[in-house]
Image (tube, rainbow over all chains, first blue to last red; front, side):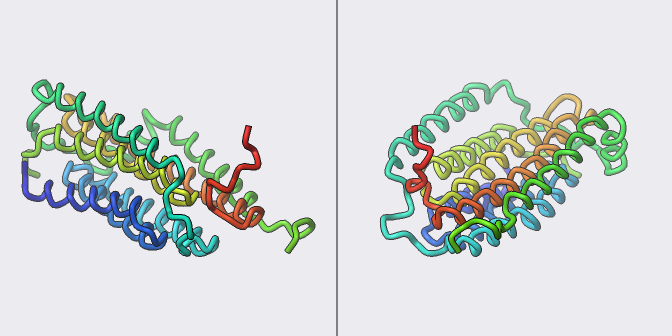
Length: 167
Length: 107
């Protein structure tokens, strides 16, 4: 395994761990950004340049900013008195550990059958664009409709209701 | 571009670890925004699997895994926008984002 992969994997996993373990919610959002960046670099390491830059644009540029805005709008950065973890945290941790055990077992069992190293695919952005408007044009249109619907829906849900409401 | 020296198993293990971390976060945190963060981590772990299988698969020029990952990123962005809008609206009504206190619809 290459040195670059170890650094990127460590960055991603530590970022993810910090994102779910830290007490201050704003720090969690920043750790989440680190995990997203590590994943984007892993995509670049896998010769998926388009997906890597899309990951940087969408996740670091949009989702992380949205999360920070939501935290600040809901005053979520204040640490609650009775801890940051739910009452049923032990059951949740057990479920997550069981899921990881099953997936890890499956990966290790199939490791000898998986390909070790293959030459890098030569895929450029032109091919991706042609595939998007050719073979994958229907999913592309559906995603366009979904994004429009989600945008309108998010605005309507978060819109302030003036008529009723105590404040 | 050099040939990749890391075996596919390495990427799959990182994705499995990230998925488990996201699941643990989604199941154990009180704050609704942190639950959404956990869900985002799980989606990202799935994307890493898709890209890794695309890279090591027999026909990377068919772009199937790559396209799946790109569409998954778009759907995740829509999900984050709607989810955070919901959290803001719930905070406006209930004045909390603590999921343990949101028991009005308890069955």
